Image 1 (cartoon, rainbow, N blue to C red):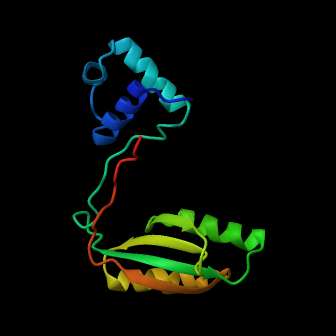
Image 2: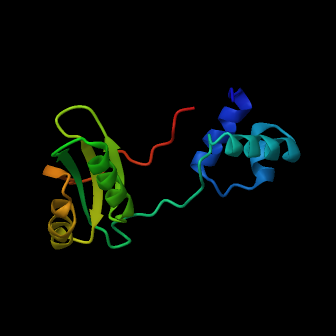
Image 3: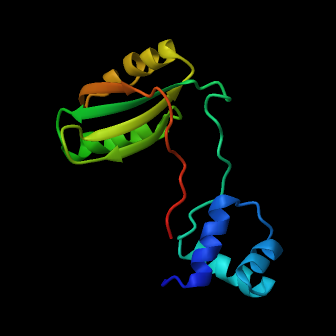
Amino acid sequence: MKLDEKDRRILELLQKDSTISNADLADAVGMSTSACWRKVRALEEAQIIERYGAIVNPAKAGLSFQAIVHVQLTRHDPEKVEEFIQAVNRRPDVVECFATTGQADYHLRVLCHNLSGFNAFLEGFLFKLKAVESAQTNVVLRDIKKYSNIPV
């Protein structure tokens, strides 16, 4: 799907406030409500809009400890890699996981209640995975930029 200017404006507005009514969205974009609804549906069907949701403040929800964990695997055979990926996907405290180039194979963003909760994550989960060779942790001191909109 090729995006036109109205599509881009719709995406910008929905990223700022996904609860905006279709009538207000259509008005802001300069379209009829039915045409706007069709464009939004097309963006959803093309999976350009993947989902809608609320942004929760982790600290206010009791998750004041945040770390970036750089994980190196022992081996890269498909079975071990898939086992690692499935295990990470089951963990709610791992809020993001990226496979990357460089020294580490994976980078995890982990949210916990406190340092002891993070230690339990490491000892009770991560270090028990057979595929994990090592992990290095960077504790996040403060957020500078996060949850930024995708530049469309």
